[in-house]
Image (cartoon, rainbow, N blue to C red; front, side, top):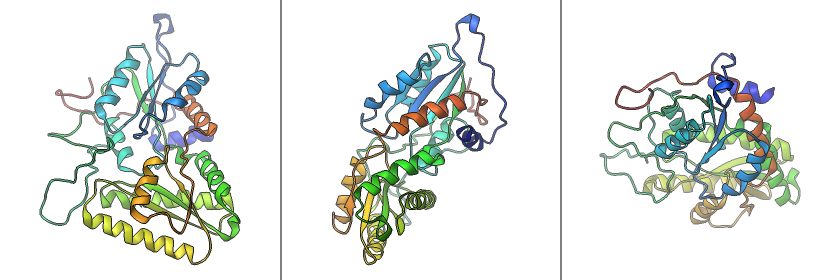
Length: 321
């Protein structure tokens, strides 16, 4: 029931159950679409277990959810399986992120598109190029919203569930020698835009404080790493993160865990920014913990009773039909 309430609050829609279609016509009540934020294929190992838990429910996935074309193709594949509703589950761990705002636009929840481009106070120039696929690119008139004959539902992220803090708390406690005398740091990949980063930091700090309470640590904090940003942004990030780490180290030990599905990218960027001194690092992300799969199964079933989330529609040149 708690998961249902969370999904309901996110969607800000009445809790009226939608019709599941005419079973006599062979339509399935719903399918599930897993939207991963650039895990580099690491999520594939999770799919077989999740599929076994969702027996009879069509399942598809996208490894880079900022790729609107890939998301549309996955929606098309589920429509081809004659589902009445598609329950999309974003696997971003932070609800206030540029990636989540992009998804909310694609699903017709957000009116205006969002850009995850590096900020610059000088005259406009081309943004720093990044080889990472998570870069949101808005060519021309911007991305088209998703089109689907089936109803679309976008669920809450896992940071609205106690499962995330439980997983991260256990990761941190496993590193700690005496949690009551140590601090816990969450390390995540932040948005390229400084304006978006502020909202991300607030949400990530709230998660870190919950982890602190769960694990019994003396203090909590966050570090953020970014690629594809400008030199001035990189310098500012480094200075702020160094100050955070210095303040926590002076009072005792520090353990750091990735706020990510797969911690490899965050670990590489953290090493490049701060080195490895002053903290004990657990590079293991949330992937592989059975509570992640349990949450996916739980929220998919709860959200399958919610109505279509789409409020904003594109014009005749693309988007909703």
